[in-house]
Amino acid sequence: MGSDAGQDERAGEAQPRALCEQTKQMLAVRDGRDRAAFGALFDHYAPRLKAMAIRGGATPALAEDIVQDVMLTIWRKAAQYDPARAPVSAWIFRIARNRQIDIARRSRRPEPEALDNAPEPASGDAGAGDILGLEQEAEALGRALLALTPEQRAVIERAYLGDLTHSEIHAETGLPLGTIKSRIRLGLDRLRHELKDLRS
Amino acid sequence: MNAITHHLPDEILAAYAGGSLDYAFELVVAAHVSLCDECRAALTAHEAAGGAVLEEVGATAVSPELRSRLFAELAGPEPEAAVPTWRRRGPYPAPVVEALEGAEPRWRSLGNGARQCMLEESARGSVRLLYIPPGQAMPEHGHRGLELTLVLQGAYRDASGRFGPGDVAVEDDDEGHQPIAEPGEVCICLAAADAPLHFRGIVPRLAQRFFRI
Image (tube, rainbow over all chains, first blue to last red; front, side):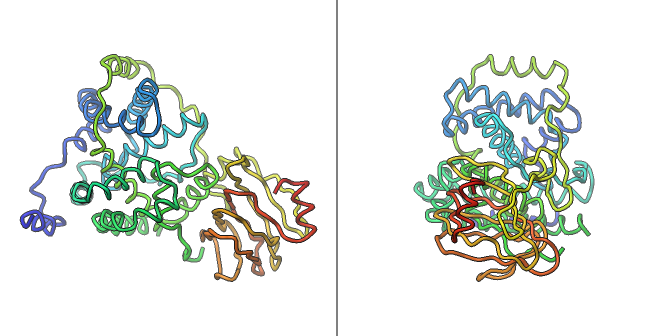
């Protein structure tokens, strides 16, 4: 994977690579209310969201209701999507988790305060490098997940699909969690600095 | 506000991201992350890991009707926001204001000037606001499970150090511990536990019977 590593090192500078399809589609939904792009997002994420809901204990019929609810929430909250702060898969994962819990409990799950500044416009120079950098880290994260042993990967999946308690996560995921998280340290540092600027 | 020095451990943030925490702890996590950029960034990292899992977890075919139902809904008018958006008020971050449904806390005395306001209590756990006058000790208590205490105003000290606004204490044992509020401001904390708190001493025990603490 020598060529990959070389690419990663250049990540912060020139960006010969384009944004991934889902990010472009999500920006088209946010900025243009683009239904074709939303349809493409549906085709990619709906089957994954259904699988996630079923893993979370939903029947197939309830899982479809949850998918519909989550996709509708994505459409309606699109204005809050900021690709410089979170990869599109992370943003959708968060919405899916929140909605699934809201529906199961019939009450709203406590969520952190939203940051009150507006998302970066997709075309802004300041945002473009950050967005690509974060995306490359999300891709590296995906590769790191696939590179784990099947057992380690199963534990990580169970942790993020809500199958493990905090003490089980503490006891069982230490090593693979570290591997996964080291892949997004750069993005985290950037996010931390951005948050600091925001408050100063 | 002083810098936050006591943060949420990774496994609690991962459990919040994954959705396996109960309401009481979720409220403390949401309140702390509202105040703490460090933990907001860390939570985002866990959600990125969750997003990677979502991409790889597999795909279960959805029915064709789901797509048409969804697009029919998009064509309809967007409903007005059904839930109000809560804002931070005084020492209370928005998730706590939401738990209070926008009202002021309704304090009940615990004796010696200490007060509490129960926000939610069930067999699975409880979450409450505590109000400790300056220089006063919190009623001494032990517990069997996990306890998270987030300082919202003022500060306290116990055997493990000083906790100021935004700091969160994590107790996962049965050690009795006796936090004492620092002089100055009234100390207000958000405290969640997954087992009933066991206050030591006769007066707190009587209070426990009357006030369900």
